[in-house]
Length: 467
Ligand code: ADP
Image (tube, rainbow, N blue to C red):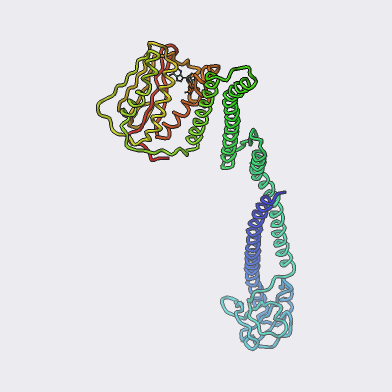
């Protein structure tokens, strides 16, 4: 039994006990007062009846002598006393006898009920509580205390109310306990889920049984667990990819050095060139990894300055002139004469264009062409802000649809068997995409196998603040 369920049960019980206790107290009070009032009213009716009986007696006898004999029979409760006074106030009848011969006024008896015969008052009857027997002054019609039967009845009613209250509290305790268990169950399940996740069991999911707030919490918990699981898988995949990427050049370097040391290979510039090539690849890989991890964690510092993107692209393209000439590939750039300056980090955007041009050159056969075009665009389906659209198109081999969806993934390469020094690390497009996103823009591709590829960079005209 955990503490929360006891707390909830206790709270429910406390509320129930307070409510029922208050209710019982009020019901007792009201029952007692209503019952006494009812008894009192019936007493008054009886007194009226007594007055009529006495009136009949007087009518018959024309005097009060002998009244003592009948008043005893008129008494209906051991708690009361009947006193009859004649017209002058002289007490002529008393069920307790000891006021006989005294005057009502003398013993402060007042508020009696008149006894009339043919409209003429012949005397008065006083019904008083029997506690006035012992010589106290008495006021007739003083509330006559309940007799034993009446008191017993009232006590019985009050006892029943208390019993009902106790049963009510017991039922409330039981229901409160069951209700608490029912409410606590999903919270306990969430607690179990949290300990599983904390213990590394990221596949654990909580059963979502309701649509209330706890159900929503369970759903959020499950999506959090899914995200954690996915991140963990990605982390493991990334580690494996990095290890794989590092191992290849290191194996080449290690093998070449071993071969040279064992005298299998001569130590010449060709062998040293191989080692150099692999170290360049390693350095590039480490640089790429650093960039992508900074971009993915939002820590990439952009040094934005107002930049003429067309000039930037032209400058970048010119660096590829020698390589393209060597491969007999035509380079082109076109754009409108006036374009607004953009607040961007020129080094990072150059890096993006550079990656796209490197890929284009790598995948375009001799005789093909690579062109950069640039234009101002309003919001479109691909990008919903006013932007400058830069496209880098080639007439190369293109990308098949099954690869197209993945080429922006880290370490994804269409032909993984390609030589590492010739091909890239599989990080180029992932980095380019992150860099563009860091500028609040978007990078996407359109390509058909055998027909070339066009990569589009959309850079918003009002760039968001540096992340
Ligand atoms: P890499 O650095 O290995 O080139 P990228 O992330 O830059 O990695 O590219 C991922 C994959 O996309 C590459 O393996 C390549 O096959 C494909 N690719 C990228 N650009 C082009 C292009 N212009 N034409 C054809 N395929 C391309």
